[in-house]
Length: 390
Ligand SMILES: Cc1ncc(COP(=O)(O)O)c(C=O)c1O
Image (cartoon, rainbow, N blue to C red; front, side, top):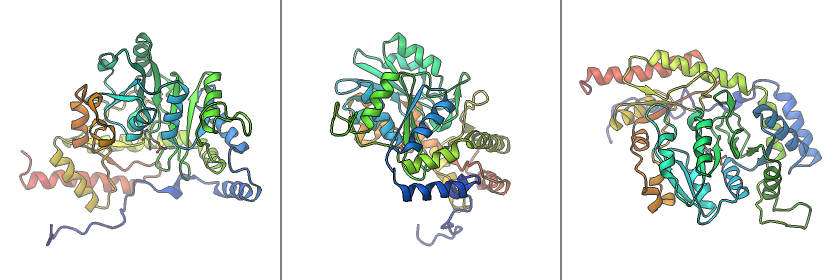
């Protein structure tokens, strides 16, 4: 690498993938006043604002209950625990997800089994799902990857016919709809992350589980709080996984703005598709209106070499592009094992080698979109002129 004469890589990208201060959308004074009040008054753990947020979130989603927890990872672990998933069980999920989906399964002592994804929408290939069920399968975790809703009614039918529970990993897809219904509301449990990168972002770690069943909600409330219905009485083995009151305040502030932000993300995505049409790229299929909330905007190149070259070119151009995810779950050392190799996942492998994400934020402006599109087009123009591509 020494002696390279290429352009210096900007140390701070000029088109960042996150811009946290822009995530408040005005009205910060009121939020800061509420935070100041909380700091001086106490009630930091399971304060009344947590219940307020849980109710508002349930109303937004259309679920009977939501239970605030410490993170999206904990949402998955607690949901599986509350549903009775544990050692000896198999849980089927998709090979291209964030590692937490499968780590939660393994943390419960159950075995993750992977299904490949589809070429068009990059989501779990539901045609292959029944083939992954065995007599040990207890649950399926359907993941709405990159913000695109998977086909929940179909997954539900397949799970029900096999006597298997359906759980949704909704971490990347708040607000997305499957057949007109918000994800996370038509299964045994929807698991949410409000980590700072997410479409609805806390100022730190936060998560929730949405459920329709009253008893399940009660069990989740017990689990998140040491299994303790009252002080000094521990009925079941629980966790310390409460949603902080401070995070509930931040989330309450942002929830009303979420649909407008998601609509803006969809506009940015539509602009990318239009302006990048004609280049040798493929995109994740968007589905019907409202199915995709564009947590991430994926582009797919023809080869790994092309993807790596595009990534390097974008980085050198100040565009904060990133690969999500470079290693399919069955290849992660912590998650590998005989069950991980049971079903081949060639599409997930190709996606891990051929995709990258362009920045998508509600506040991405015309200059930034132009800079991204020019950089992408510039990369392919330079390859054509240098004869790299036939
Ligand atoms: C698909 C998916 N599942 C689970 C998680 C875990 O959420 P958290 O980081 O809040 O633990 C994330 C995000 O980070 C995610 O993207």
